[in-house]
Image 1 (cartoon, rainbow over the protein chains, first blue to last red):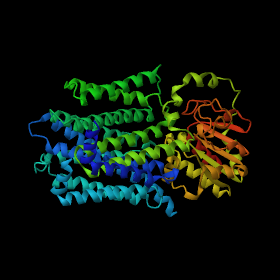
Image 2 (tube, chains in turn green, orange; image 1 turned 180 degrees about the vertical axis):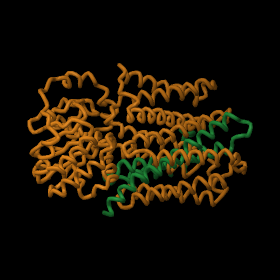
Image 3 (cartoon, helix red, strand yellow; image 1 turned 90 degrees about the vertical axis):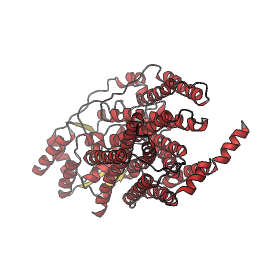
Image 4 (cartoon, chains in turn green, orange; image 1 turned 45 degrees about the horizontal axis):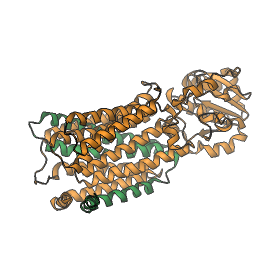
Length: 105
Length: 472
């Protein structure tokens, strides 16, 4: 059991390092956000996790021509992922646009 | 895994674009936390995302060295998603922003869920490690999707708060079932596909039941939490494809989202546990007896009297809440402020951090109506200045001015910081009816001697008030 875990750690060392560092970075990067920006920040983060679309694109692009089920599900996944990314960034921009407007006055 | 090494050797430009993508996400989040740079930060992250998407389409090669195909399908899907997403995001009204975020979050969760489904179908005998990642990604994606849909439905009023007796026990049992079945599948004790789909079903049920009893006032916290769930689901995709940008993007959102959730709870002076388990909606019985208590009669005030009172005041503070958002009255509200200012009245806005449906909701809304930034006072400043205010005008806010938060330890919102409107000389409350606010509890403020009620839709009332004021 322990050997298996060590082997897993050994072969996934890079990924595990990225995960750990990203966790700390995520906490560090936003920890001083003012309450006013909570909503846009949430919305911006929402758009960023749309990066899941890359997985959808890979799945879609690797599906065999005859595999209708995978093609349909993959197509749906790319559509939903795009909605998440594009919708997320546009909504966030609209929110922030308003913050910008009032600054000028 | 050797695949990681393989990926390293496949295409340096793809990896470089992923690195740039990761850096833009970090910079984007960082810049989003400061008012001056926020918009730029969002743009930068969007550029990084676009780059990562297109380099994936054209440069990705699997470990057999084959590139992607089905370009027609991919681009069709990208175009549909972009058109629909842009239209939805552009057309949505400012008041419906929180729902929109929840909806988009659900889409991301569903995307992660579908990826796992396809991977499961496509690989008849996956290695246990891969299977674990597939199952975990599917569970989290599904919970996030189902939960976000319920949150969306609740915020736009399609779904009412509902508590199932013993709901927490049922939820716990479902959660147990998900874990047990996952262990069976991953451990190789069953190769039956039906078990995999049972996990999917239970995860969806869990997502629904998890959000269902949580009160609307707490919905922002839940959306933020589900947001970080989707981040984690995306990160599992990163493990699945050894894809560094999915991994960093997903984990960043996962951890930043969790911190944001906690910060939001802090703004309401509550703990996350308290929101999730001791949710407002979960104890209608407790709120019932206290809530139905006869508290005397509220005093009504006419439009004309209100106009006179405000016109001859020196300082007026407007306290907006969700009622203002629902009525789309932010522009009329700004007009009222201008009319009063012309008459020499000093007008400010007292903004409670969680007024509306999301933290910062009121700021966004009033900014849309061009209300000058300097006039928006944060809660502490507003409370400091409250003593010198002659008239406080509460527009569709309720829980954020409820004195029970200060002096009734039995109240579910006890301990939440509020705007202390009673320090002002007069309090005028505009509401559509005497119905309690989103937390579902009575507000004693309405029955206090300083308080007068001005019933009606916020927009209508404000319009009439503006014309009355012009005649004063």
